[in-house]
Length: 123
Image 1: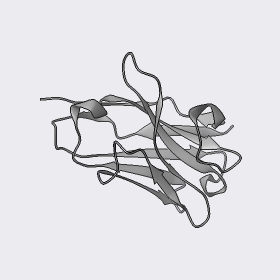
Image 2: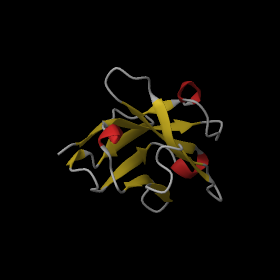
Image 3: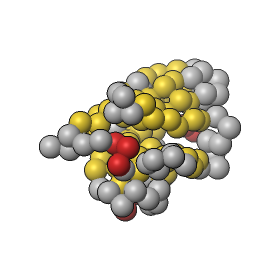
Image 4: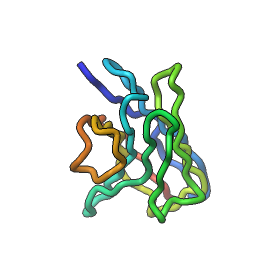
């Protein structure tokens, strides 16, 4: 069974950092595009970052550019999202997802999803 499991969420103060992990099992994540999405209460799910397989081109939402960094460790079959300079508006449940077509696209184009991990940024 193909699974994605997020971890690393928690509660931090504004300006703090968290590192989210997306661990894959049942498949090799380097054969897929892996995206991070988030959904805040009352808002639609939005794309945060995405990394493509192979060379690994990465993409970021304008709201997180310069603060978040996506990376992959193929030996651990894990994709990470390093989040720095966190803001209250970053508060959301963060999900990782995999694309069979290896495209960094919209949420509805992703094929496999994790359960999510909650990130809360507040004073």
